[in-house]
Image 1 (cartoon, rainbow, N blue to C red):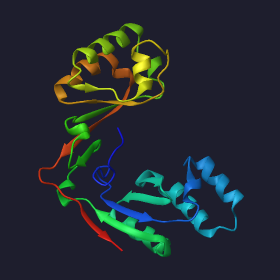
Image 2 (cartoon, rainbow, N blue to C red):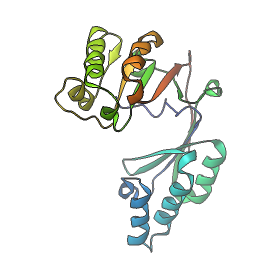
Image 3 (cartoon, rainbow, N blue to C red):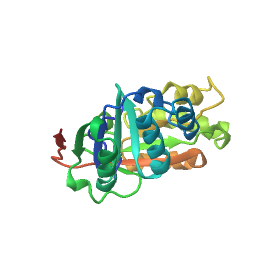
Length: 213
């Protein structure tokens, strides 16, 4: 599923700041190794170097993405102000999430609409989940998901290929579950292969408050 980033503000990162930065499409992949290569290849591009430095220095305190020549950051208020001060000439937009999302805990995401309209949980598998899940557990997990097709959704082909034994490996990925009670068997069958579980919290009559420059 493609997340609607205008509504899912990564829980605690309630401030969205948008910039139209030259060269932003070159920032993928966003690993430190690639960002260091950009700095080396483009020493005379100060804004690109500033952006690379900012991401590497603050990676643990922000979420970000690059799309359609835009650099989009999800941060707290203070970090958003820092970004705007650094890249003032490229700043194009700013938005904040509904204040009702203030009390979100870790691994809880606020949203105005649940994924696909009904799924409250997103199960993330480890990058090497196949090393932790036995063949018997994999078969049982596949059967359980198939029996509860109205409550479990596997959107990615990679996980389906693994569950249906078309591929012996699964390098991460995620699937969705409607209610907490359907998570218990999944934990029992694949606990060692699960990286984390994200809970989506829908706020009744929630709204996005947006300010554009």
